[in-house]
Image 1 (cartoon, rainbow, N blue to C red):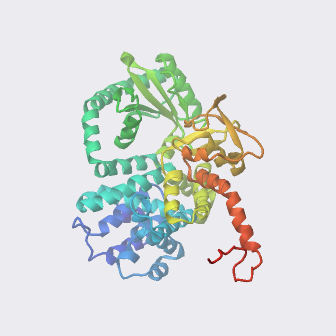
Image 2: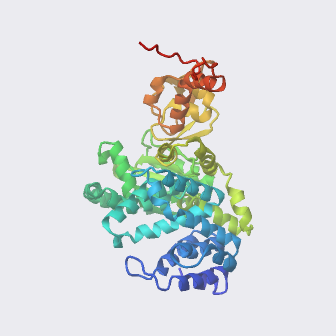
Length: 508
C-alpha cells in the first residue's frame, strides 16, 4: 500500500512516514533489505484492517525507540500523546517473546513481561493489533533468520499470537500465522501432511469450484440474492490438529474444502440453508448455528454438511457480508466500523471493549493477580486463555468459554467458586454424566449442588483449568491454613525457655 498516496505527506501518517524513514535509514534487516521496509509493511497491514491514522502512525514508529537514538519524549513532541502512548506500549513488548511461548523459560522477569503485555493491550487494543501486524510481517519474512531463531519465532507465534488473533475474532490472521509457523515448528509433520492431502485436496477443490455456479443458480431460482460464492480450503495447521483427533483418517474430514455463500441478510442465510437442505440431504450431526449462538470470539455463520452432487459430503458456510468481515478481521472490523461513523478515536475502544467477545481481555487483566508464582502464571495463561476452546451453555443459554476437554467441574468453577466447591453432579444435554466427562461445543450443562459440600481431591486428576485447580487446592488446604493463621495470630505463651509452647526434649 502506498501510504503517502493514501494519507498525504502532511498528514499524521505522512509525517510519521518521513520521520521513521529517516530514523531507520542506516539500518538493514537480516535479509539485507532496508529496515524501513518492515515498518511500511506493518503500517500497510494496519491501514488495510481499517484502523485509524494514529494506529498507522504508531505502526510506522513502532521500532524507533528500541532501534534508534530517538526517545519516547521525541515521539510525543512530534506526534502527540496518543501516538506516544501506543509506541510506548509496543516498545514494552520488545522483550516479550521468550516469556510468552510458555515452552522453555519461566523466570520472574519473563512473567513480568507477560503481565506488562496484558496490561498494555487491555488499556488499548490497538497495541495488540499493531503487534499482530508486526508479527505477521516477521513470519512472512522468516527465511532470512538463523534456524534456531526461526523456530523460536514460530513457537511464539503458534502458542501466543495465533491464539490471540483467534480470540480477537481475526480468524484469517490467526490461520495465516499458524500456517506460517507450522513448517518451522513441526517440519516432519508438515511434510507428511503435504503428501497426505495433496491429491485429495486438488480433487476436492476442483469439485467445489465446479459446484459454485450450481449453487448460485439454485439459490437464484428460489429468489435468494447471492452476494458472492467461493470455495475455501481448510488451512494446513487446522487440518493437522483435526487429523490428530481423528487418528489421521482423512476420510473423516468433511471440510477439507468448503463452499462459502455470502447473502445480504440473516433471513437470507436461513432461507439459503433451507434450499440447500431441500436440494441435498444433510449429513446428520454436522449442522451448527453460529448465528443464533455465536462463538465467544464473535464468529457468526451457519455451517452444514450435505450429501451433494455425486453423493460427496460437502460443507457449506452461509453468512452475511458483515459476518464475513467480522470473521476475517474480528475486532479490527468493529474498529473500522466505528471509524466510518466518524466517532472520535478516544471513544472507539470504550465503545467496543465491553462487547461480549472482548470480555476475556478485561477478565485476563483482572485475573492475572490470582497467580503469584511466575511459572504457574504463565502456564495458567497458556492453558486457560490461549488453547483450543469449547463453548458450553447454561440452561439460560449463556455461553461459557472453556479450554478444550474441560469438564463439568471446570464449568461449575467458571460460573462461581461456590458452585464449583458444592458440585455433586452434572446433567449434559439433559442426561446425568460423570464429572470427568469432556465437554463439547454446544453442550447444555446443568450443575447439581449440595450445600456444605467440599471438592474432592480426585478432581485434581481431571480438571483442565488452572483456576479450578487453584480453588480446589485452596479449599482442600483450608484446615491446615486456618491452623497456621491461628498459631500466628494467637501464639501460645512462652514456657520460660524462649520457646512458645514447643516441648523440649529432656537431656539425658
